Every structure is written in structure tokens, then in C-alpha cells.
Image 1 (spheres, rainbow, N blue to C red):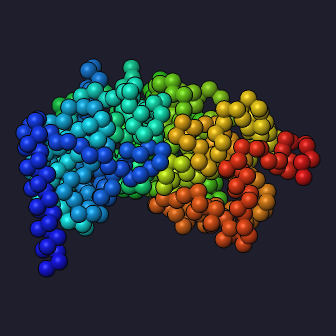
Image 2: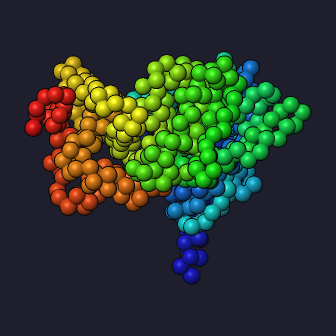
Image 3: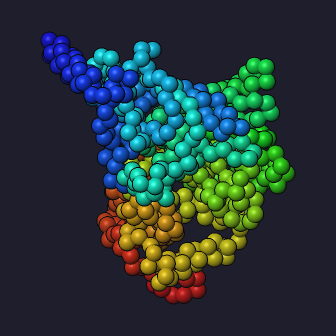
Length: 490
């Protein structure tokens, strides 16, 4: 009886919203007024949406390389976590041709980066349903100059990018909604499948595992699956003159690397030790969390690398310096554990991603280089964060750096040295027990800085609040024994 009353109330609410819509000019065409909705992230207040859990996305995309447009249909399997008479997806740009729920056309509305959908009937908490959005047009290259969308303009992530040799996707922190409709926040991780259609001779590489390639008169459809829970910004698709290089031994994680054809001979030797790197980090952190791994080197001068899930993304700069390449590759690999499997719960928790990947990348450097190389890197980080000019631009806190400083060098370098200071304080045995316990406890989920501090206190058996406070929440640079190298700072 209680459920019946709830359904009646939801039905009345829906009918009222539809009647109001019909009274507003323009709503008869299927457009409705959009209400703000979000997961309440303080850095990006409009990103993500409450009321549902996105379980799975199927991305069916056909890029037009001459027009630089996408023709796409996205199917989203959703479970309601609240009673719904409407809900939002994050989505920028494009022309939407239709929106359906369980195959039935529904009303929808748009305002900036929000797509609001009104079902034809109330959806009860716990119900699972499928939403399909068909759209086409040019990928947005950034957020409009007059729209901050809850964060600084320069963080208007790339999304889907066409270039002379094909296309690539990088989306941190909020570029996923620039190429598909999505609940665009790491708190709502989902599985994915892909059907990407390109003309011969283009090759497609995506996150996850390739299942088959279907050739229809020279149009190739690459079908792949990503069965592990994945944050939206970590999903990637690459197209172009890519050459597949599969490595890995029986019993190890399968490795598939894709290299831009004209850079294959330079790139292949750089990445041939990937299996050894995974085995090395499994000994430090725990079992590699996904089914496959690999990297893609695109024929584009990217100024960054990104830990896109199961397929890290690099530009041609990875080919320029061997030591830098080793550190960068280790950094992106470590992110598969910390950042991808253990995801941040709020964007303010970025230290959990970047500090961990930056510091633990040195473990691999220690494995393959002399100690003085590692010490030189630590010295460099310490000298840089201690420099007055650097400190003038650094955030007051790397534990809560604010949106404009999300990827400031201090988050990486001081973040890494925070873990080095912790390691010096508790000794290696306790430190690496913390690392392993943190991964095991929060894998396939989300964590906050406070979660890690509580865990560190638990594992060490002491109160480490003061250590974390000075390193994460103050600007002064504490001394660390042995840094700078050769100085007695004890």
C-alpha cells in the first residue's frame, strides 16, 4: 500500500511538470527547462548528478575525419537511487536527434552543460532502465569564455580531439561530457563497451579489450569492452595510423601497445619492459587491478601524459628523453592502482592521485638506475618547492589546492615528498604496509585524504596528524633528513 501511494504521488508530480512544460513557449518541441543538479563537488559544483547510478555505457561512434564531426548513439544503463521524475546528464554541444528511455521517446532540455530528461512515467528507487541519446556534430574544444561551470576556464579539458593523423581522447577532469552524455564525476564509475566505426586504413584503440573488427565494404567497426569500473575521465578512444604491438608472457597481464606508424621503431623499445614494470609494482602495491594494460603514442605533440584506464596516453614527447620517459611511464602505470582503481571521492583529493603516482614512480627508477639518479630527482623536487618564487605561485594547501591549482607542480612534487617524509618517519616496513592496505581497502571504489590519514594512523599505531597537517595543509616546507643530498637536516 505504501508503494502504491508513492507511485501515485510521483505520477501526479510528473503530470504537473508536463502540464507546466506545455504552458511554456518552446516546450511543445520536446525542450524543457533545466534545473541544476550535481553531486556537490566543491571544485566543480555542477558536475555529476544525484538520484541514479550509471552502471554501463555503450558508445557507438562514427567519426568523420574530413568534417571533424561525430555521429553517435550512446546507450546508458542506469539504476535509480532515488524516486525520479526527471534527471540530468552532463553533456556539452552537438545536435541531439532523439532521447529515449526503454525505446520510448521522452522530453528533454538543455542548458550549457546539462541535459535534463523527463521520463514518460515515474521511475522508482531501485529500478534499472536504459537511456539512449543520439547526436551528431563537432566536438566542443572548450567551455565558452563566459561560462566557468563551477571551475576555472583553463580546465576546459580536451575531450575528443581531431588531429592530422586521426583523433585521440583525454578528458581529465571534466572533458568526458565534451564527447558523450555522462554522469561526469569519479564517484559514479561504470563499465563500458564500444563500437567505433572508421574507414580503412584507420585503426582504433580503446580502453579495455578488443573483441572483434567487422569489415563492411571498407568501413571497419572495432568492438571492445571495458569490464572494470571506470571513472568517466579515464575512458579513451584513439584512431589513426596506429600499429599494434602485443607483448607479455603467459600468466602475465596481456600487454597491447599502439604506436603511431611513423614513430613505431623509436617507440617500441621504450615500452618493451612494460610487463616487468607491472610485476615490479605488483610486489609493492598488490595485484594489477585490471584485465589488460598498454600504452598508445599518438602522432601529436601532447604536453602531458594521461593514465587513461588500461591504455595510458602519450604524445611524441615521450620519445625525447629516456630517464624522463621511464619516470613518466612508471607514473602513469602506478595510476592504474591509485587514481583508477582507487579513485578520488572529490576533486580536492587530487593528492591521492598525483602524490602517490609521482613518489612511487621513483621506485622503478630505483630499480633500473643508480641511487644518485633517484637522489638527484628528490633533491630537484625539494629545491623547487623551497624556492621563494615557486612558493609565491603554489597553493596554500595541496590537501585542498582549489580548482585553479588542481594540477599545480606543488601537488606532484610536494605531494611526493609528503609520502617520502611519511616513509622516513615510520620506516619502510610500515610505509609499504600502508600502501598495500590502502589499495586493498579502497580498490574499485573511492577515497578521501581523510581516509588515507585515518588508515596511516591505524597501520602505524600512532597519531600522524601533525605530519600530514604540515605537509598537506601548510605552505612552509619542512626539512627532511638527507634532503638536500649531503646536508645534515636531522
